[in-house]
Image (tube, rainbow, N blue to C red; front, side, top):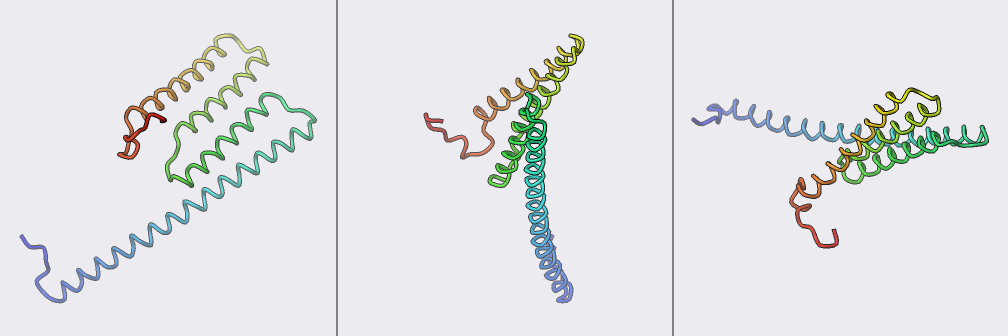
Length: 158
C-alpha cells in the first residue's frame, strides 16, 4: 500500500510536516546539548567551590584529618568524572563507585572514632567490599566484553 498522499495539498502538508519535524529535532538536540554543557560547567564549578571551601576550613582549623583528605578525594573524583564526561560524552560508572567507596570509608572512619559497635562497622565494611567487588566485575566485563567494535581491537600493550 502506498502512503503517498493523493492530492497536491496533502503532499505539500506531508512535506511541511517532514520539514518541521526535522527542524524541531535539530533545535531540540541543540537545546539539550546546551543544557547538558551548562550543567556540566555548573557541576564542575560547584565541585571546585566546595573543594576550595573545604581547604579553607582546614586552613582555618590549622590541621587536616583523614576525613578531610577523603573528602578532597571525593571532589577529585567528581572533577575527573565531569572532565571525562566532557571528553567522551559517557558517564564513567566506575568513578561513581569510587566516590561511593570513598564516602563509605570516610563514614567508616567516623564510626571507628566514635567507638561504634562492631556489627555496624562490619556492615559498613561489607558495603565497601561489595562496591570494590563491583569495580572488579565492571573492569573484567569491560575488558573481556567491550561495548563497541573499536574496543574489541586490542593490542598486546593494552
